[in-house]
Length: 219
Image (cartoon, rainbow, N blue to C red; front, side, top):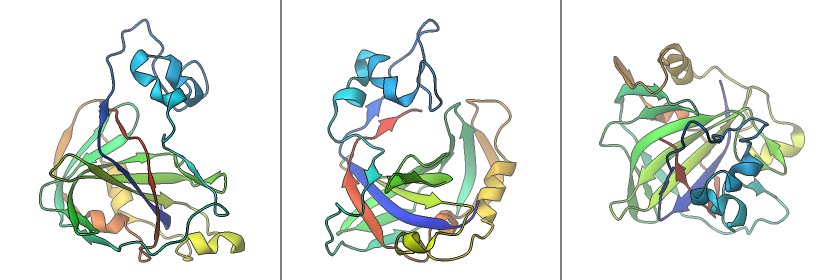
């Protein structure tokens, strides 16, 4: 998968752990059916915010309604890490080694993990990209900063270039490495003798949208 289209930063001070679901209950899913996203709020009492919440993410970013302000720059201080990867049945997730941080507005957040959603959870003007990677960072006080990088196999149309890097799609070697090493057995963490660098997931253009929203830990 190639080129990044935009960066979206999501922050939230608390993390909700998913409740245990027994074998007789419908389990949540991204696909159409009994567990589809529009029904998450009714699947479990712990999920009520999915239907009643006012700051739920993912969201659709409407370019006609955004507030244009000068945002603090995002400083990515990422170091290479050994590859620890898992397919938990909902997403492919990579746990990242210590020592990599995001600095934003004077606050330091440690990179904990990153994971993928296909297609992207976030939309811009109602359109989703082929995939998004969510880089999850945590401050020492427990608050989170999640950076979402939208990715596409197609070049942006003329009207969308203001939200994209403007480049032609290029093969991303890190994603190719990850896809080649996804464990065959679900829910089994695989620690490999490989080194990866999360900087390869970031676009050259570090412009971004920001919004407050929920973050649910589906580990």
